[in-house]
Image (cartoon, rainbow, N blue to C red; front, top):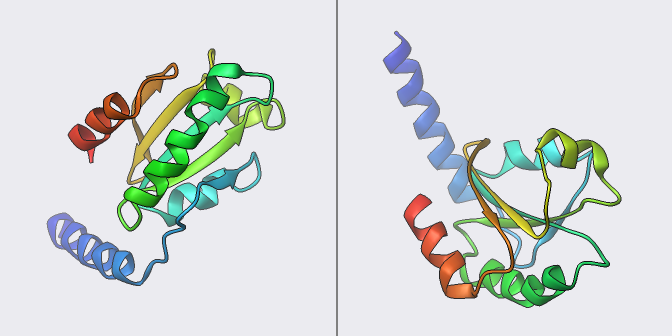
Length: 128
């Protein structure tokens, strides 16, 4: 019975993926919408950043580029840790920039630091 339910869930998820509209730009993630966004998209990367963080500014164009290139596969979000302390604490963010990679709502990887685009892509491609 459980296997049958899992199979139905997988089929439904695949159907929803086909109908789901993926944003081409990173979306804003906040304390109030985090859970909803995470449930909506099967694969997501959340960029944890702050306005004063120079390394965060360094990877911002990389994140925007990846959002366009991975459109339809992964949704990229931006979480300002200064304005959204609740979720940042819950996720254990201790340094920024930190990219959190979620698959089916579960945290599967944490990429810390302003890495070059190629290194971020390599990590994402292994996971997704």
